[in-house]
Length: 285
Ligand SMILES: C[C@H](O)CC(=O)SCCNC(=O)CCNC(=O)[C@H](O)C(C)(C)COP(=O)(O)OP(=O)(O)OC[C@H]1O[C@@H](n2cnc3c(N)ncnc32)[C@H](O)[C@@H]1OP(=O)(O)O
Ligand SMILES: NC(=O)c1ccc[n+]([C@@H]2O[C@H](COP(=O)([O-])OP(=O)(O)OC[C@H]3O[C@@H](n4cnc5c(N)ncnc54)[C@H](O)[C@@H]3O)[C@@H](O)[C@H]2O)c1
Image 1 (cartoon, rainbow, N blue to C red):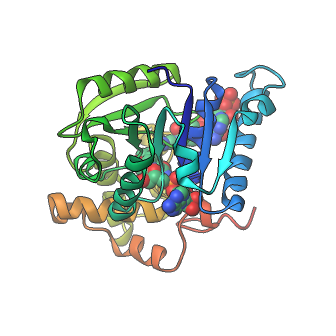
Image 2 (cartoon, rainbow, N blue to C red; image 1 turned 90 degrees about the vertical axis):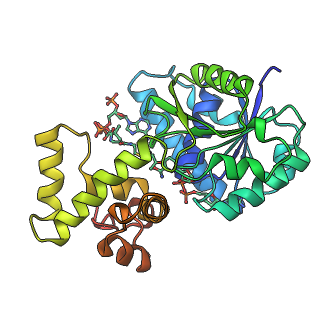
């Protein structure tokens, strides 16, 4: 099947970036969120990113608006998905929400359409089981920011077919990304390893070993990571990191138990860059 139109569900941090990358590579995109205001916010993020790429000469001069014109906003999931050739879901990290959405997609999408999820760590097999096409359900795990990060982690559910894997590898390549194949184990490779690193850094903070700023500086300059753990947690979203840590704890035990400092920030509504405050305060500049 030739893939021309991609429906992207969720216009948040990830969905807006995924929609942008798809549009940059010539696909028509149906971008879905709960309100047109949220879709506008996502398109604004994509516009700013495209302008950066244009300024750096990474996309042709004047192409920002052409790329954006390939993205159409929808608040009706069924209307967005019914003529899509591929669906990529990027709604919040909640298994029941994702299963419910996949159930609805299964009713409305043509039988041959692949349904991919950008989940950070939830079970692809469980999401697939909510549909009558588990062979066409797959994890397509992108990284933040999607226009810059080079990898898509392809997560193969228990019933995902080899044809589905091959099609998603091909599409990922057409989107300019490298891929790795990973089994459907909680946290896959990247979220499990990242969470272990971040949680240990939060424990170091809680034990009073060093300040937020000095832990970030140590990891950046001493270990050569592009961002310190607290900068990165704020960037990814503290709510997402808490969901990931809770689910990893259920799968692997106490070593992933979410530190209090993370839980309290989320309870206070401080979700990182997207809410204006997290480990750092972004409202000051
Ligand atoms: C939890 C989930 O399931 C999985 C995840 O997503 S885990 C998180 C994965 N992501 C990471 O680990 C990100 C770590 N950080 C980084 O790689 C880098 O800090 C970064 C790429 C975000 C920014 O790079 P950095 O050098 O720190 O800053 P900056 O100079 O602003 O950006 C570098 C280049 O990227 C570009 N860039 C950064 N963000 C961009 C965006 N959103 N859109 C377009 N271009 C962007 C900049 O314009 C710049 O381009 P240039 O080299 O041509 O000037
Ligand atoms: N933030 C990251 O760094 C990152 C990286 C890789 C994967 N992920 C995963 O991607 C997914 C989305 O994360 P995010 O950071 O973009 O979250 P986000 O909160 O920024 O965006 C989620 C969007 O989905 C929308 N939404 C909620 N219910 C919806 C529905 N029923 N239909 C359509 N849209 C709906 C929300 O309004 C919101 O705009 C999660 O599964 C997350 O684990 C996140």
